[in-house]
Length: 213
Image 1 (spheres, rainbow, N blue to C red):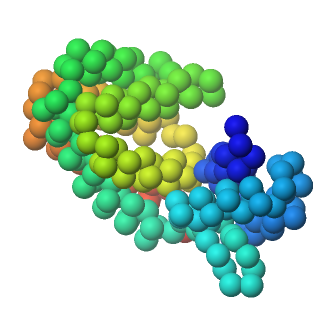
Image 2: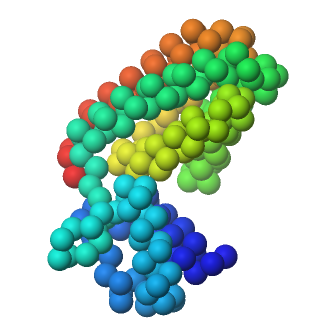
Image 3: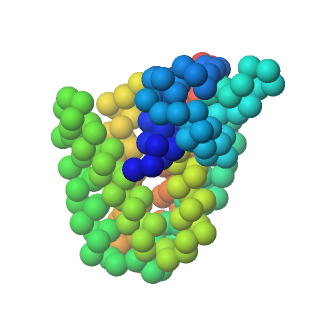
């Protein structure tokens, strides 16, 4: 892995997981030493993060980690509803029913993972990630997939804002199962509606439990 790729991956993970909080200045000398790379590949990594919207240039302060406000979250979910609703509808038209039926069955068992310790919870997030990947593969639209992947970077940050709430995650698993069921049934309108409902409830939960950062 190139030094710039390594630095990008490490910084991206630290930002997404809130180890580098909004407003943190990413000083070149300090980050170069921390990551064990020279300043040139670090600059490449910071440029990629800025292009993704995870960092920004703040005048004389240099590169800083961007903030996420409740207004930002509203805007992200507006875009998410448009993209993911369309993707679910396309997956219902183009996807393999057996793939989504299997995901539906697994998602119905997800409460067993949600009630467990951290490794099991990560298995649940991995299952949700597999549903995302299955939809990405089914829609056969590279432009839509790329747009959703760019958006998901910020959505992981938003998810980390909310502590893992077992009741909400259990409800979300059922909502994901409903999305998978609609896709497996080949019903585009139902798949889009199930996605819209899930996103509405997710947004309501985040806004109810968080204060602006």
